[in-house]
Image (cartoon, rainbow, N blue to C red; front, side, top):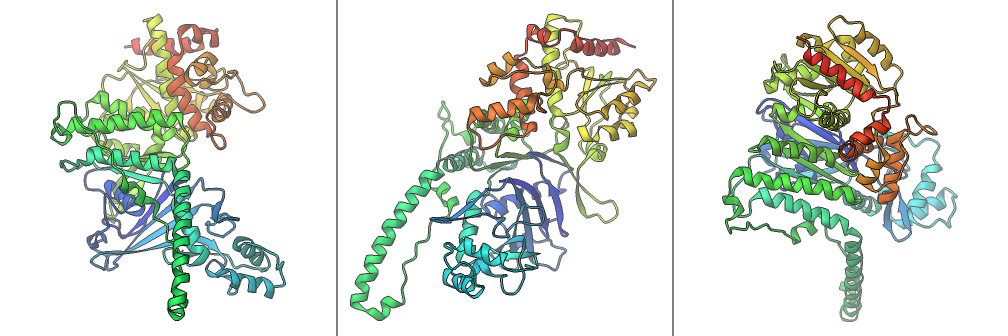
Length: 610
């Protein structure tokens, strides 16, 4: 499952419900004490209620309401749920999805109690017709009675099939979005909720303000996450053990029950053996992994920067590990201010690790940051600006290109006087690609700029679909720097943006690639070297498939993925793993006309212009 959005109501500073759409990589930016950490902590409470535990004081102090609502929306849902042997169903068949076809789960915490209680609801477009609104609560014999009453196939086996037949027999189910209680569900409703829980993402929160005990969370939290991931990967083995334990336990319970019948038949008639399987999350607490320093000095006695390096190492290793495997259960890493106490070099390592992790199937990364340098390296679409409305003083979370000025102000960013040229591209992978290509070509011809190190060139990621908005509104002209725009050939409407930029008189210049897109300049040898995947790189799509799609299919088959990874993830992998393996020879072979060299020459000319 992928976390698509979160809504928070009456939690700390969020008195009124606030809704946030989440990407694979999402970054919350804002001033201190504005509500960034509260979003991550609300999610920790929703998924675990462990590292951060809901307290009575978490309800908004200005509200007369005591109930806190945290609602999460998920997509990339499991295709089927197994309730019992031979009882397969799906969320869709059970009418447990909303009108958009996604799964919405709401947890309501009553902070009016000293120890807040919790209720769980599935918010779904569910039948409300009087005679069929509660089928998930009915036992098998009750469903059989309804089947017989409606003259349906009495030979139907399995509760899911009977429910489906009954619902299908009703002319108008009166579907309506309602809150279906999950925490108090009965019969199949309870089993379905248990199945949903087992598919929810693992959530690992890493906070910035840590304690410094012998069991320091700087180390323990990453290792707990490692244990959680390991358990998710052996879930099938655990289920087999659990089933075997259940069989043995029920066998013993049954023989005990039979013996009781002989001693006291009346008492025996009041007892029914019932097995309660362990909660999946409880397995994690059974294991622990520790790290010892070579010198024997406890890690918690080392400097904060060293302790935070454990996080750097963990995320770098996890990014590389997840590249090689396919995980059945997804995971969300939520990290507060990862740049804290880190050298800029380590910050860059972290950023690249987060980008790599977020591109992996079943993996999301949520961040908060105060660092302008750190934020500037993150994808534009990941930014969520946390602020307060000037008039109402209520918190708001905004996204999109119109928040960039506010973000710059919040982080204290001012124009860099060293920058002489703005290089405008469509997406964050383009930045990585241009840096890789220019680095190789600069090494062979020093008159060409190295975009990965030259401080006179600043990248501007226009955001693809928002490109027209950027060009029309002329957001960058206030910086008084000439712009070079390089767009892919795959979108015909970009030609209009190119014409508008070239019509300026400030030295700005724009072009589209001759090939279909920037990935079309990649060499197949680099792909094979990076991933062990054999494929042909073409200048233009073949049978409607461009290079990222062809690679996505080939790589997914080689890795044994279920389905094909998305084009965006394919682009990320190619940018980060294959383009660094491009050589001068490979570039010349894929670009014999010297188009890339021409772009770099144009940039060099603008840099040299007084």
